[in-house]
Each structure stands twice: as C-alpha cells, then as structure tokens.
Length: 327
Image 1 (cartoon, helix red, strand yellow):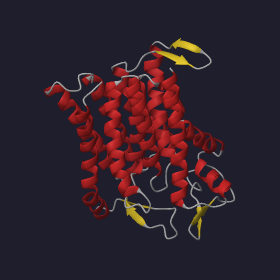
Image 2: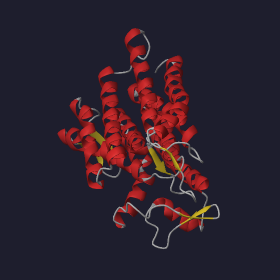
Image 3: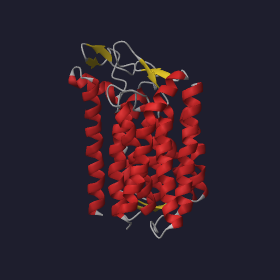
C-alpha cells in the first residue's frame, strides 16, 4: 500500500515539531496573556491556552512532508494531492474558526453552524462517494445531497462533538488519538492511502500535544484544538468512504450530545465539584457524559475519569475495526 519509511517519517515530523515547540510556545502564550482556567482543580489555576495552534502546525507539517514525498519521489503514489490539499484547507479553516472563538468567544449558536464553511474545500472536490451502505437499510445513493448536505453536516457535527466533550486534562487528545488510531487501521484495511496518511499526521500531532495536556496539564488546547481534531476525523472518514466506522467511533460523543441537548446545552455547570481529590456530579446533574460517570462512580479523580472515557472510546474503535474486518 505504501512505504513504511514514508509513514514513519510523516509520523515523526508531525510528532517532533509540536513536542519540541510546546515548551517555548507555552511561555509565549503566558506572556501574551492567552491563558485559561483549569476549572476542575481546587484552586482553578490559570495555564496557557490555545495550544491547539501548535497541534495544527504539527499536523500541517506532516501533511506537507507527505506532499513532498508524493511530488519529488516515487513514494506515496496512492496519495491524491487534490484530496490531501482539500483536507488540509478544511482543517486550517476550522483552526481559524477556533482561533476567532478562543479570542472573541463566539455565541454558541454561531459556533455550532460556522464550521459548515470549512467544509467547502471538500464539497468543491466532491470528496467521498455518494453511495453508502447503511445497516438495516441497504445501499443508498444520496447523489448531490451527499456533497452539499452530508459532507458539511459531517464536518460540523464531528468538530462540535469533540468541542463539547472536553474540559478535562487529556480528554480531547486522548479520545481523539484513540479514534484516529482505530480509523488508521480501517483506512489501511480499505486501502485508502490519502486518508491513512492524514490520520498518521494527526496521530503524531495529537500524541505530542498529549504529553503537555495530560494531568496535570501545562497547556489547554482551546477551541482551535478541539475543532481541528473533529475536522481531521471527519475529513478522513469522508474521503476514505468509511462512514460506518465514523458513525461507530462517534457514539460516545453522540451520547454526550444527547445529554447536553436535553439539558439545554449548558455553558456552565458542566464541570465536577472537587472534593478531596475527586470530582463529584453536582446536584443538578448529570448534564454531560462526564458528570454521568461521576454520578455512577460516586466520585472519581480527573485522571481516572479521562482514562475511563478513553477506554470507552477504544471499545467503540475496536468495534469499528471488527465491523470492517467482517466486510
């Protein structure tokens, strides 16, 4: 399918750049006053925010290396340059939206809709196939509806889903890395080289960032990070035509969405109540999947809460792989 040396190089570049840049970036973000509260700590310390900028830089560097290998060597012949540039454009547009939101605090209604515009590069190239095999329904050809409606909804839905299931050290990056890792396996199984390479670059960037965002976090990734993670996942799924895998992997995020939907998408009251090293579900909860786990467990540490959700995501990721092994 592709040369192992090329895959290793892309992963290495996307990992090393964020890993090496973050110590300096964290100091610069603090000097610039770009900080946020780590709200699930007893003293709510202020730490550097918008670290997702560095994550996106690492991802972009990995993608550029892939383009260079495809253009100037005989490697990665299966990579479609138009497709990979469309994905890069979508992720960078999503990152721009995240930057604006982090700095200007966009209204929630605007933030939920505006990622649609970031999907336009994928719409323009008619990314993906209009024919989908839907369980219990069969094969359906969505025609132009796929490009004009389903692709924008996919990008917007995934970006917002990751953005909502967030706020705990290592959660967004840990679950995102598991989702991307499992999708990498599926991309390899279905021989979607471009999606596979995009996911390799994403995995390297996320794992490097996780080193600095893991409990106790030295940096928060902000909306620029969470929205970008969702866009990487959705773009690879759409281009690789493994929408079933995307639907399975997004189930934990969807469950969190449903809980928040029934509680009016609260902008406050979503965190835990900290007592003696554990987070407890507030009396008005649960309004989110995280608070539901707090309630069921009778109190849980932030680190264990995140590990629980990463494990849940891994279960659904393995289920998605199993489904594609059977296809």
